[in-house]
Image 1 (spheres, helix red, strand yellow):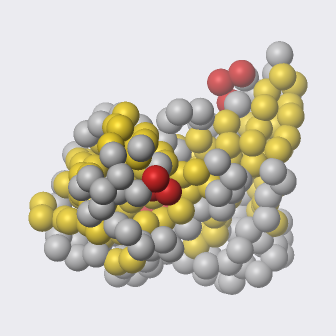
Image 2 (spheres, rainbow over the protein chains, first blue to last red):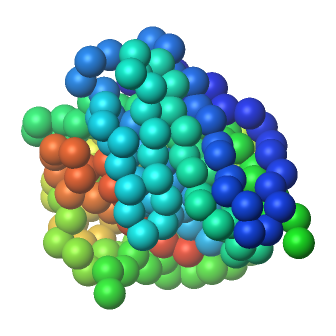
Image 3 (tube, helix red, strand yellow):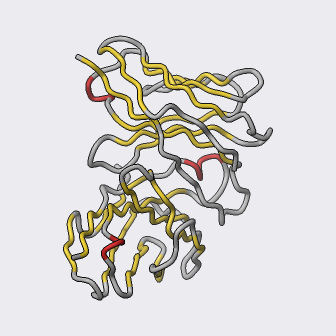
Length: 113
Length: 115
């Protein structure tokens, strides 16, 4: 699986859009980008994934650059509850299972009141 | 609502004790995972299983074993607990294959302290 690079920490004002970057310059053509977040004292929570098109769901938007070497997770109107560690992972979806999923150290996002 | 349940939120054990961490999921998922999480190190994969009685080593399997006798249950075993196994342990499950196999559902975690 491709390595990802994320800033260790970021701040964002409450009500503003939080833009979390992820660099995955060695991504291969069939690797998907997945995002998770982990709120303090809880298990990680899946947010969104994408291959090359931009994706949006009720939690966030995912923007993947045309060359797929980086992506940005966007929380459009950040609230205090969005304070968490955010993980970006790239992975080839297995056809038959028997594949691990590895997390990095993520970005600690702090929403400022 | 989908659920991954870990048997204990907090445990305190002594060095040398045998420790069982239990995890049950109700989503009929094939994949199950055990991670540990330590400050500054993120989540590290210990073992995973893609079928009953099947197991695969993750990135840090030393000092641990696992058991998967039933599809819904995945146990992490510390045969002889040591202080460097003090950590938060997280269990997760997912579908077997395809894009959705990357959507892991996690339990709340078990914080183990080894004295």
